Length: 168
Image (cartoon, rainbow, N blue to C red):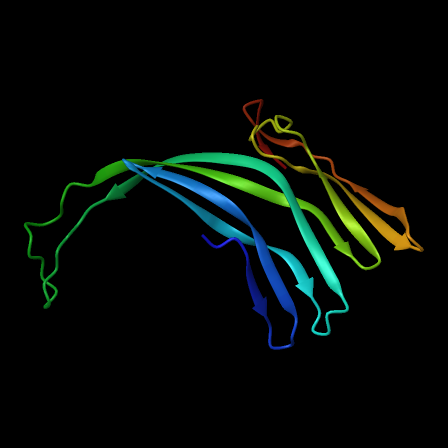
């Protein structure tokens, strides 16, 4: 299992990827767990004087289910079908659980940016998922952390026949 990997660009900037979002996919009798997205955890300048660190928080999860249809045809080298035509499509139920990671904090030499998200259950459409409520920007000066900006977000829902169906 790979937990962390590093990439250095042609310009000498080094990137560390040390967080991953995962997926659990169940298709028929088969189950697969894998990292579906790698998240950057650090960016270091070529001279190593400047470092930006990224940390993440549990963003909840999403559950999806779908039918996967499969039909097969066999072609020979000349492009003609060698079986008796199309097979009857067969389907399998596929269930996917996506575990999300949302930004928590970005820190750098002179400050940080903090991301405040909703609690579990606050979303009406995806109750296991979270939304961004607020961003706080801090400055570091003479060892003192000072809040310099707050950005708050408000949301509503797209409506369908009077019921809340999707965050907007």
